[in-house]
Figure 1 (cartoon, helix red, strand yellow):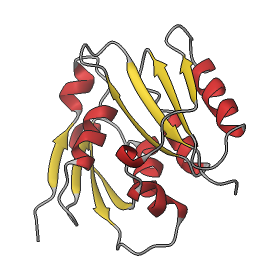
Figure 2 (cartoon, rainbow, N blue to C red):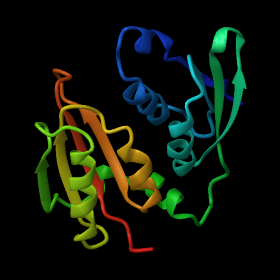
Figure 3 (tube, rainbow, N blue to C red):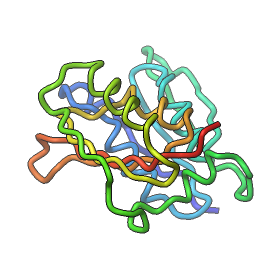
Length: 171
């Protein structure tokens, strides 16, 4: 069995950065069946739902000094859940976006409100593209909960976050 991939996000946070992109990058780089060992300066509660929706269970352990170690372990494949369907969705196979939102000048929570409102008007399988000035970490669990698949990253300069969301079915 492959050893877990270890990612320590404490330096990213110490430098004022947002570690979510590094975490999702690590997840996408995992080998089949490989676990992710995350080390953080706090218990990353919002990340638990995101990772569960991507097919990972977790075990969180408090470390000395208030830090946390979380082992995210892939769940067996073959689940019929909507999360498994979203996880297996490949953005390269998605249709072209039907909605484009420029949320780069909006302050939170307006980008999340606009994106979720637009998704409510869309048919299952349609794609929305949004441009934001920061990574919408609080939006991700909402998208997952509502059955939407998403993919996103920062542009080459690291100044804009590009988000694509494929609308899920009404549940």
